[in-house]
Length: 201
Image (cartoon, rainbow, N blue to C red; front, side, top):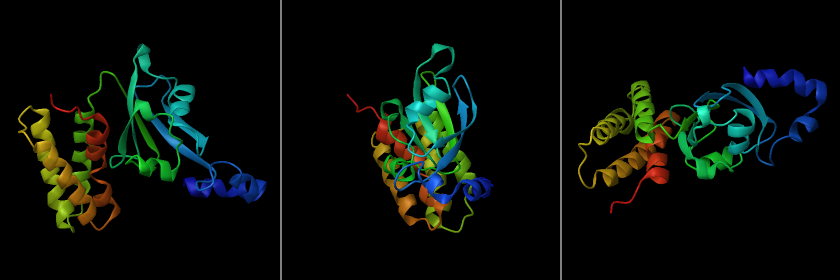
């Protein structure tokens, strides 16, 4: 639907004008659903290359009730969780992939200081695990094991070394799955480990 909606505008204004917006590799605009802990949730269409910070603060109005934004989950359930210190990243296909996320369905869920990124990763992993068609062993069984490990962690029942095992299994699921869902299913876990893990003392 989004792609088809561009067609009349491009026919009327020309492909050159459309291509003049965005970045060299990501032309035009993108539509995002802004949800979560921001003042102004809704839909926003922005030129590709607009920073996460501009979307979070100039468009979505920043955190509600004066709360500090902690992260943005981008790309739907199998997207990645991007921390606030990377909000100056431009939104385009390559930049988001380099952070461990993706453009995906164009969903942005904003989290503030009260949200737990581990619980959020578990929530999205639970959704993706239920969506697995079951064809690939790594996706069918691997996502179940990842979810079980995340549940143990959130209950305080994890053992020393479980985070290393979690990361190794997540990488295996990504490499061993055939379709895009399986390959991206570990993104919430991997980005949470990458950006929010605190080294043990």
